[in-house]
Every structure is written in structure tokens, then in C-alpha cells.
Length: 160
Length: 182
Image 1 (tube, helix red, strand yellow):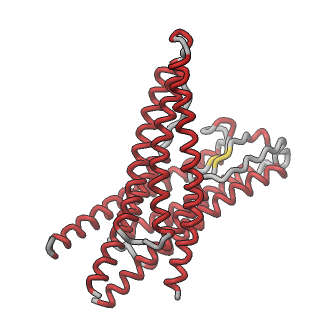
Image 2 (cartoon, chains in turn yellow, green):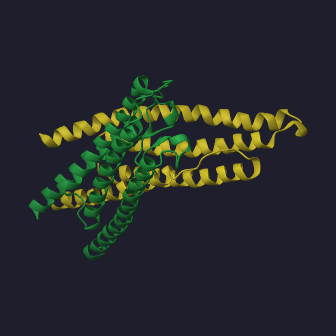
Image 3 (cartoon, one colour):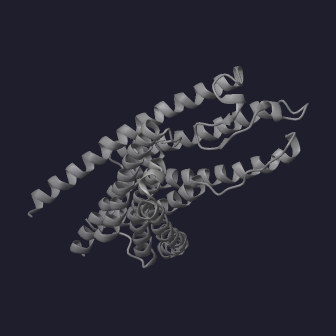
């Protein structure tokens, strides 16, 4: 009975988080074309002397940043989607969580590069913190723990 | 892959978890020290480290607020919040420390681990809600209250950690079942 209760709770909360992540996916999908438009339209439409290089840099960088954000969001969305469907310990579920962690770390590294260049060449004020790195590491670590459970479950199924 | 290879792979995997758990355990120790140090400096010299004595806790809650914006007679509010947040932060770090200590020992799906993860999740949710209470309390003690209410990453992280606790509990049940079968 308790086992059933736990699973029901996981499915319910996953459903809520999945909905939030879906909203995130939609917003990334709106933001990426907007940043791309902000990057490309001035290049195409404006004469070279009227082009602000800092604006172009920011828009291009933000488009790439949003793309990284979209990938992290998508991986997490897929992870919670599988949880919602009751697939707790299988390779795909664990894989999505691990991938989300790795992409989050990639996003953090890119953020560092983007903010650093922005500060160095265009005096843009953007704060880079360690939150992304820790979030990514924790996700990868949780994925490892889930992998252990997955192996236990596989072993158990073989034994039975 | 034969049984020996599988066993070796599992052992390597477990060693990796232990190693990273040790790393996180030391991060907790550093976090513990840093939180105490920051709180001590903030209590002794409020404007010493952060501009205009803004409230800050190493754990999570942040709010840019100057000591000069506090109504006369409410001076105790600043140290009070610092102490509350420091205690909150330290307890959270303590639970994290105990969890990583267990993981370092190779205890992955222990009953206590599930408990620690659940407490951390609830703690983070409470911390986030505490932040909202703090912002509302500005109406009482601030000269020009401007509550800044937003749902931050702490609340979502807390919910995620709670979810992990339930998943780990499932893992524990599988492990117990496995031990009984063997």
C-alpha cells in the first residue's frame, strides 16, 4: 500500500513539474527566434557604420545561451515525462537526467565565456555564479544514484 | 559480459559515488564554516562585508536591504533575521553533510538517507516560504516597504529534492526486497 502511495506521489509531482517545464520549453522557443531576429535583422538591414557591435554580440550570445537553456529544459522535461509515466528506474530515465546535468554544466561554461567576453570587450555587466555548475553536478550525481537502483531492479528481475 | 565483469563495473560505479560524495562532504564543511564566518561578521560589523548592510545568508535567502531603511525601534530586526537564516542554513548544511557521509560509506539506499533527503527538501521549501514571509514583514518594520515577492529556484529545488527522496525510497524497497530474496 505504501509502495503504491509513493509511486502515486511521484507521478503527481512529476506531472506538475512537467507542466512547468513545458511552459519553460515554450518560452525558450519564443525567445530563441526573438534573439536570432535581434541578431540577424540589424546585420541584414542596417549599414555597417550604424551597426552596434555590442548589441550584435549580446543578441547572438543570448540566442546561443537560450539554445543551451532549451536543451537542458528538454532533457528535464523528458525525464519528468518518463517519471509521470511510471518509469522510475530504467536506462532512458537515468540517461535523460544525466544528460540534463551535463548540458547544464556546458551551459554554465558557455555562460562564463559569454559573460567574460562581454565584460572584456563591451563592458557589459553580467554576473556569473556557480549555481549552474552545482545544479549540473547534483543532477549527474542523482543520476548515478538512480543508476544504482536501476541495476538493483534489473538484478532483482533476473533473480525472480 | 560475465558476472565478474558486472561486479567490477558495479564496484567502480560505487567507488565513483563515494569519491564524489567525499567531495560534496568537504564542500559542506567549507559551507558550514563560511556561513558562520559571514554571520559573525554581519552581526559584529553590519556594513562590513555587504554594501549598506544588505541581508544575506550563505544558505539561500537574499534581499537587498539597507539597515538605514529600518524604522526606529526595530533595530533588532537585522540581527534577528541574520541569526534565523544562519541557523536555517547551518541545519540544512548539516543534513547534507550527514547524507554525503552515508554515501561516502557506501550506504546508498539507507532509511536514514531517504529521511535526510526528505528533510532537506522540506527545509528548502520552508526557506523559500520564509523568504516570502520576510518580504511581507517589511510592511511592519521598514520605512519604505517594497516587498519583492518571487518564486525562486529554492522552492523548485526543494520540490525536486522531495521527489528524489521518494524515488530513493523506492530504491530502498527494491534493495530490501533483493536482500530478502538472496
